[in-house]
Image 1 (cartoon, rainbow, N blue to C red):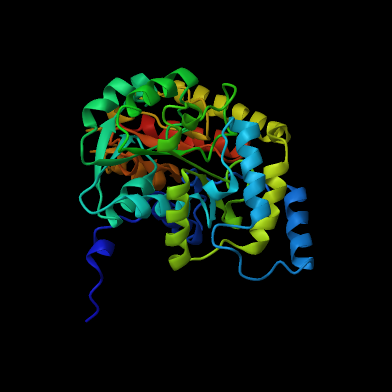
Image 2: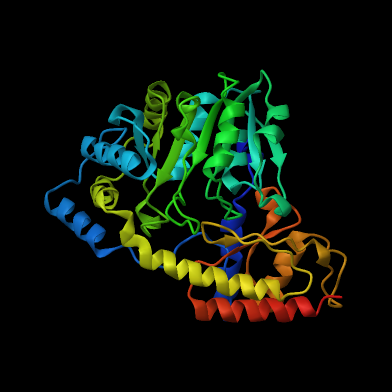
Length: 397
């Protein structure tokens, strides 16, 4: 009899992937399901990136790559960090991985020992908790709610920092809330974190270019915490390169070397073709993304207007990424006669079955009062989905 490992049995399946699978199963049955569950832009990879990939193949960049990435890509990332974020990372501080998720896993595996505490503000991206658990770390959750735009302050963070704290993990712009930390808010966090030099912070900035409030701000810009921060980014979201699988970190040299060592034993270097294509993305001025950003901004307004009209739905206006995270707890205890809504998971399943709209329960992101809605699809589809959701919610009493 096959006995699976304890670490595997303790691991939860990704809720976003699980909901995507359920929606595909209904689609296979002929149901007209609208999926708003995955964080995947509906834009195509820009032609200049695809052309760079073709050129790389024609030049026979089809062999194994250096574990931390090609030098020219790491140099391009270094210049991108300076241009876009004001951050000085030389190529020895940069490690390229097969997606930002692997970058995050490398950081956690490099730093966290069994029993170490890892502070994670909630709501959080679903995989943070599971990656920490695999490393044997103990997640310490700091809750933020919709009244604070799901953001935490240094004052709220500090009581959770102890001698056992090894790492803090958060994202800005945030998945699942779309919240964006301002420069002043990050400075407040930096002031607190700088008092605890044994603590490293992983700042996930994968959505940096999908920002509706102006310039993206990075935690590592503050000198007092620069040596404590690992900046995570990648090409999936802004450059519509989800399937290309490329993420990267800028980090203190000791952590970068550790991540390269971990990666060398698990996957080695990222795809040669993806790396060469990503150089083109790194070198492109972000102003190229204006049309995509405008489209997301219009979609955000469409969904916000629709949600604000739904009685019982509490929603804030997210400043980045492409998600809403409305509080739907007012529906708990209600029923349409055949479905009893006890929690956010029940409501997500109800909307999938009744409205044929796939969302993700907030439980997966650390907030059982909310659901996550991705608006990374066209306006006609979003309008149809919002109408279905509104109609289904009206049936609950």
